[in-house]
Image (cartoon, rainbow, N blue to C red; front, side):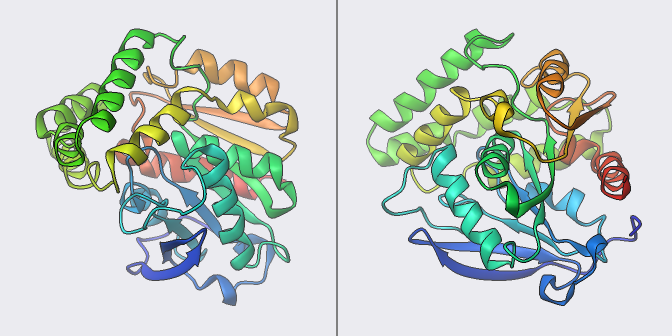
Amino acid sequence: MSIAEPSPGPVEHTVRIGGSDLHYWIHGADPAAQHSADEVPLVMIHGLRGTHHGLEPIAEHFSSRAVVVPDLPGFGDSGPMWGRRHDIEGYARLVIELVERLGGRARPVLLLGHSFGSLIAAHVASAAPELVHRLILVNPISTPALRGPRAVLSLLTSVYYRLGRALPTRLGRALLSNRMIVLAASRAMVRTRDKQLRRFVHDSHLRYFSRFHSPALLAETYEASVTHTVADYAAALTTRTLLIAGATDDIAPVGGQRGLVAELADAELVVLPEVGHLVHYETPAAAARAIQRFLVAP
């Protein structure tokens, strides 16, 4: 398969998993109609406070392969899970069930996770390697947030989320959705000098970053994101893995990525220049090319 022109618009589906009405979108081909090895479906897991929209710039580069992108429970259009925590393990269990419903027991999928999604994807591949043909981690969390280069900022952000949870729900949501704070976070992450692309990134964050179910759920998810790294699952990860890093990423620094790839049994690292933690928004074509090379390699 080669990278092609943007595929037709995605088709929305809903399935009941974990007590959640899980919404997911299929780009490109119908996964049920694909049978050959080079048509294995690609399942993409978005990052913290994200939705499926964030991964569409990468997904649209694949037209002959089915690309499945869910909204994680509690974000976007998907309702929260019931009887499960909204942490790495809870989300990983849900992704495993989704992959099984997509036929993963008979035909393992390609699994991609961005940022917080990289933790979920790594957990899935370590817990159920029989379901994952190859693993792709974009801006993977490789450095402990509370001990890395942004430790002070991470600590302040933890306080911010805890305050949002402690306040009455309406006030907590207003704090966590504050336009100026969302824009400040977006501006801190963006690297491109292209004004049109910068506007697109900021508009996307303003539109989708506040689509969370509740301050309590968001705080629970954030806490999981800063207390785990992909390295927690490295010893059990045998699946062939591609790491895609941003050269100027200060949330998931390149140094940590190099250390992580050395811990994995079968992994390679691609570092994209002049981009930070927003590879999916700022350099989706370069990410798609790296993924394609990885998928066709013997």
